[in-house]
Amino acid sequence: MRLTVFITVFGVWFVSLQGQTNLSASNSNESIVLSDKNVNDVALFVAGYQPSDRSSLYQLAQTPAWKKYQKDVNLGWSKFEKVAESFRIFAKTEITSPFDTVKTLFYPFSGPDFLFANIFFPNVRKMILIGLEKPGSIPVFPLRNDSLNKTLQLYKVAIEDVIQLSFFRTLDMNKELANRVIDGTTPILLLFLARSQMIVQSVTYHKIKPDGSLQPLPYVNRREAEVVEIKYLAKKDSSSRTLLYLSTNLADPSLKKNIHVSNFLSNVDSGCVTLIKSATYLMHKPYFSFIRNLCLNRSSFILQDDSGIAFKYFDRNTWELQGYGQYSRPIKLFEEFFEPDYLHFFKTTKIKPLPFRIGYSNPSNLLIAKRKSVINRKN
Image (cartoon, rainbow, N blue to C red; front, side):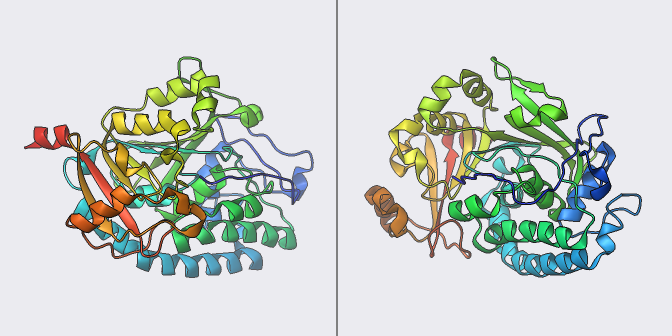
């Protein structure tokens, strides 16, 4: 799980991109004010891509601070893309019909990791990501070059872990995202969407109703939001895709107190595909039974590393299991979650190679679980 605490660092202002509302800070003459029509330009700007010449961000993208940021981000991303190709090949080879066309991806303990969700499952139409981090705000950017440089550096630092390690480190998230520039997941989600060649169409904030359905909020009430919804287009798409990010604690005691959240989760599409990685072994614990059982009951396909659902919970009569890579024992921080039965599975079963590092361990491991009833229907 990626824990984030947010405090004020720079006086950067935020503005609504929801509906037709256009809010600005009291001293908006010191910052760029954006309308809802500019949401894709914001995503392009933070991703190091040139915004449209109609955007109020266009002039900021001509400054030395932004040009340096663009160069740094492009360099980091070019290195990541070389590694990412092996992930894409794995997905094409191992996530096959009928699971490669499932429409909904469920990704608990994800934080703002749209990037790997899209790499592994590029055909889904809806993603549900979950983390402790707040949804946050859509940023506007300071006009002063020194302030802009500091702001952009925070974006650069915030994404370094995920493009180098495939996950956000909890301690780094606490330190690096603890500011008003990046006050939640929305800015990072926008960056990852743009870098994944998506066109961002809208951002909407929601509260969850008692029955688990979503209630849109005015932007001024965004800090009350439990869910941020981002509509976007992939290349060659004719209709929108949906990303829902839910901010909540998935422990059983928390969900018992927040019935509206558990109802929202219970509405997750049956037959979805599920991704779990770098999840700090929480679903090994007895008091994460709700989310563990939800994954096991709702999913037709689960891709995870050993930090996800403990191996003992996979009923071999229900699931067809395939292991990848190597498993010995967790890193020292999580050594208490060593699984002798998982190690036995790796020693006694035909395991496929894993040509990349993912998650905490190096060498890494992955497990694919396919629901047998879905496989049988296909055959």
